[in-house]
Length: 188
Image 1 (cartoon, helix red, strand yellow):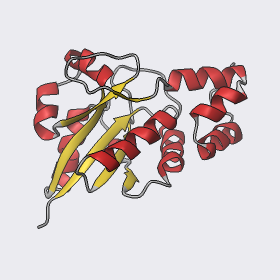
Image 2 (image 1 turned 135 degrees about the vertical axis):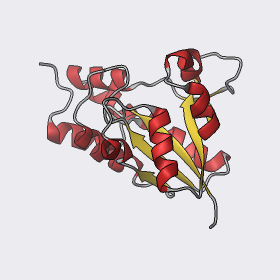
Image 3 (image 1 turned 90 degrees about the horizontal axis):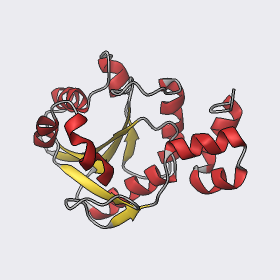
């Protein structure tokens, strides 16, 4: 069996934005990985309100479709746990793919919140992190910033305000079209 190094890039992707796409491209360009697996959360572990998994999975497929060696995985829906926990996802992936060597892609902001994660030490054991710096986030274990200062909440706010200029700069075109077509994130 040939071992493959697979980077796991999880998140709510509510919606996926250019920062996510740039993070994936950066990991593929800089780190020794064979594939990057994008894993949308099925049920957010901190109970954040999300649009449907189906919408977020579809948007992730659109956002990352032009990047070679990137696959969007529905593993968290298939595991169907009460909440999506990274440790459970990693263990589920390794049970299905024992030949994989996993790495977990995280932003520097996660380092400040690792005590909130379920069994973070086990996560690190299963998939040593690839930490990406983010503008505005400082941590001694993080490299200098490589990701722009953009968030999904900022994107959702721009949709609700009808701010086309911001959306044009922060959302991949195919995701922007999908959000408009499906009427997602509009103000009530």
